[in-house]
Length: 503
Image 1: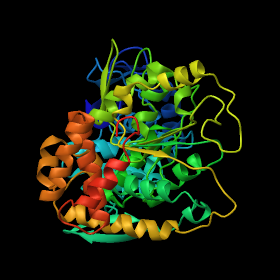
Image 2: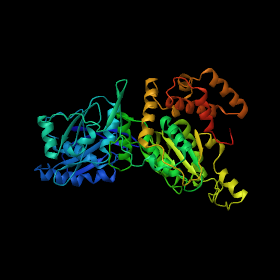
Image 3: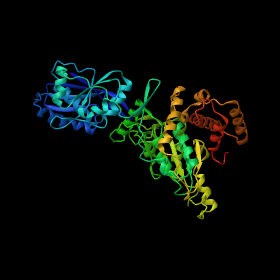
Image 4: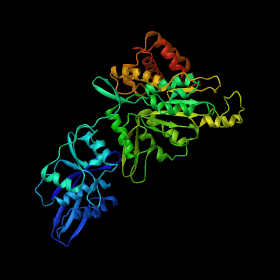
């Protein structure tokens, strides 16, 4: 019996699979057992064709391939290579233990890349130290960026067989992220200074741009409200390009999510931006499925931005279900067959009109909505949901006199300065994602600011959650101002970003 290692994705995590082969005296046949999906059952034909092409002769015996553990459902064409090797090396005295093998086979024996190989190897590398991987040359650029693995790349099935017989390949050198970087406490953080959408295009709206800067520097959830055409979506789309730098771990995590979303990983230090339409189903936003829990927009936006345009038009069930990932920074999807937990440390940005027709705050257009329609429109957003948002911005109408005042490059440099301050304090998370214990440690107010906050709490009946959010936003404003402690002006600005009905 010959055994090789492979893996399958169970939700978002890799599970180790042993590929075992056995030859017994019986009528010639080829079978694969162990809860293999149709893509793996089809591997029999690809494996047969590839082995025959390189001159391998099948013995007149019964060949059985077992994928262990047998109670775990396996899927993916990357099982082709380990199955073919288990057959070809069945009678060879070679050691295959300890090597993970991945690759889809062409009928001519060529080994091809698949989108599932990168997330599989990345997940395995986090669980096990110094794993050894045999993979297609097409996967080299992606896999070489994963630290802590010993990578051997082959082009054909014949090369793979030769490698296990003769060990005639050297491991691939580690790849690098091609981008600018900054080193903080021996850790490299990567960023890019190309701005596809630039804040220089936004004229006027100084308060909104300042709020966007604070939101980006601390990863604070933000809501823009204003008349149609005032620049709500315009500002939201530019937020992505001034977000803080990424560590290698975060870049690899984003690349893994891209692969799971059937996209080719780019390995750019650019955080994701997801903008689902308000007609999207709840399952597409949060993830789910009848048999297995598939990833949704909330999980795909991790480490980036989740943007809801026309916020009140989203179903109330979706908005209320969003409260948990906004508060706990993770989401649990439960199904009969599986339970999957995803991290949701995203910046939530939203835009809404002040009324159904959008002209309630307009000085030049008349609002056509009745008071009842306006009330129904606003009631779609519950107080517990709004309490999860850190920053509220009421935007003015545009004017011909409005001018461009700041570029994305200038804003990003300020975000970078605040980011350096956060990391040098020893923070692992951004200010907007600090828990209660971390708030007490990092969000230190001076005496004057502490006194003002106590007055605000008693005057406006602020909830415990609101107090924490004000402290987090104040901490980010102080970072942008280069202060070690939160001062009076920082606190006043944070209070000004609370919703007007509350302050």
